[in-house]
Length: 288
Image (tube, rainbow, N blue to C red; front, side):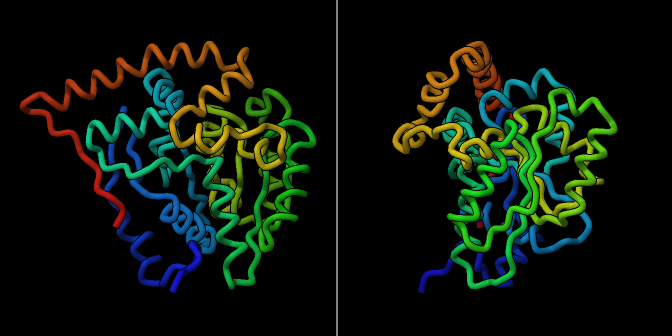
């Protein structure tokens, strides 16, 4: 008998919350070695708990790994994260070579639709209430329309596109937090780009009235159809970066060049540490 992703037996849900797999480390990031179905179940479990705590999910890619070595604030945000899932294919490939026990990529842009699919296929009647924070003016509203038409049971209860530099304006931050609180949403989907989204959630998580905050970059744009995802074959073969570079060369060329220079250095450092006689890097364990 098959079971919808979100319809996990109680004892398994308790294991997800109480006894999660041991985290694996790659490029200084402590990653949760979950597959997509495990990540979906974890987020949905948290979304139903409503225990007064906002749990915080990040999905690092190659650029995040490089930024973490230069940005103390981003490192602090990652230290606070409750769930860290590998997005970038280079990180997964490096983890495979170094035997870190990370089973697969769980990109934020795939995780969010997978959560929605699980809710739409579940027999549970309680809607999943989500708030969309980010993207350009009008884009979140378009995403909301598409979500409502495609995923029964997913209810967009609010949208907001902050003005540039809002994170430095206390009054604007207070207004955003008040907007979110008024909806009592289950999931806050944050699409502000890295590292802004991670820094903002980490700074305000004690005031975010949502069960879970997902930092998922351009996902709102993808849901709205404003940006096109790479073909599936490019995503599976690790060439999604090439599609994104062709789509936004001015914005991404400098970043990708920097990452291409820095990532081999990070990998060489990890490989050297692994082969030292006294080096015992913590390998991860596959999802239980």
